[in-house]
Length: 305
Image: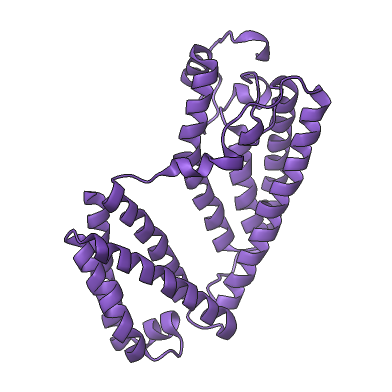
């Protein structure tokens, strides 16, 4: 709760400082508002963003909801405006970040926590795959998942982000060697991801998707060196795509995705693994790191070694 209020205090101060800069520094006004009339925008934004954030910092929950809701509306409206006019791109990024942070702050202030468990509900709830299916079926299902998820998260979304980055005028020029380097990283990361998926489907009798989790604890192949090789591969792939497209926003998208996975999804996944595999998983987790590869200690966990 205190952390949420602290965030709104910072947001109120930053919002006030931003409006002072808007009215005194032409570059700030142009980069964040384009040709929008700052007086008209300020008439709404100062009470609903700056003042509401200040009241939220003092503990008024209604003000926190107003500030967060208004921030989301402004971020969406600026995104439409910037996409149509190619103006105010930096304003979009600032308000989008503020909107996400405001939502988290509201949750902290109203509930004292961020309810990340909603991510793994419904079709994404953790469930073991059908252990009676043929081994080839696991591999086929995993292959289909790879096509869909890689196509969405490594092609469609990065292309949209890169387009908006150019449209909003917030891009930077990358050195000539960066895209080729991105290709090398992408190939290596993809090899890691494919080999991890193959081991999981053939040894674990399941798929990477939470709704069809492996029936056996997998500690073979890349899983001997790092607990989440597919997550590592996905993050590196996302960064590589950003390098290939010369898009810092796509790189940021990959990094934000890694943070969401690590802090929102991984705890639930590991709780499920502990519940299903008990001491075997706990011993494995002690011996093998989540992100940084290292030579594991000798471990005996059934036939998945």
